[in-house]
Image 1 (cartoon, rainbow, N blue to C red):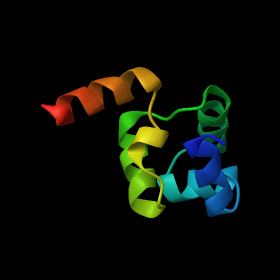
Image 2 (cartoon, rainbow, N blue to C red):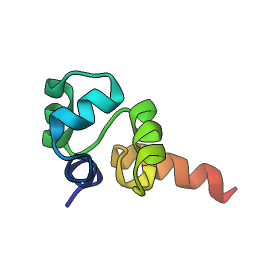
Image 3 (cartoon, rainbow, N blue to C red):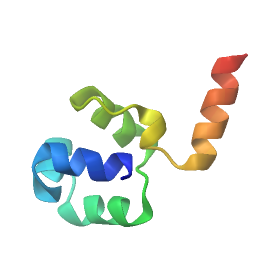
Image 4 (tube, one colour):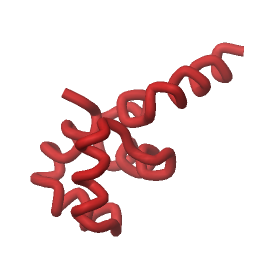
Length: 71
């Protein structure tokens, strides 16, 4: 299960998560379909739920993020 799908489940559904983030439920469904969220939303979700941003971000960004923190 992807990080965004876990967040949706923890929030009680896509509409509930959308409300908490101040976005439309359509945006949340798009994120769920593609499997990742924008950086700012990943940080917001990480603050709300025990889901690390590395599980929410696009895999390419995770690689950059982890490379930068390793230096």
